[in-house]
Image (cartoon, rainbow, N blue to C red):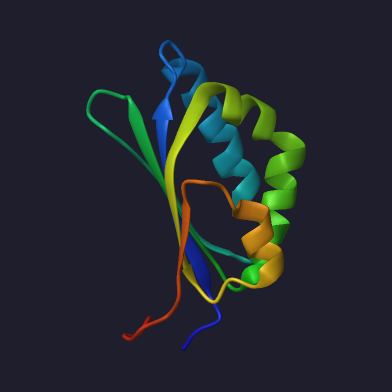
Length: 118
């Protein structure tokens, strides 16, 4: 199986924060586009603008951790002020460094079980 790791992060947007959060998202997308280890970085929003899902996929745990370091440096404070984490599902063989970086009461780790990726 692949060494890629991915996650689905589910967030509630704090009341009144959607417009500012959209601007922050645009900054984060532009910044993340330059990360060579990022394979997928997609955002989805509910019809009422109250919930956001982020799907992120990285070549390996090290690339995911590198992304998180940049996130922490540039965006974490504004991101966490505008959102509440509902759930995070981490897929693949996340190494211990990545596990420590994303562990929270709402985080669940799921290891490979079968299938393929193209």
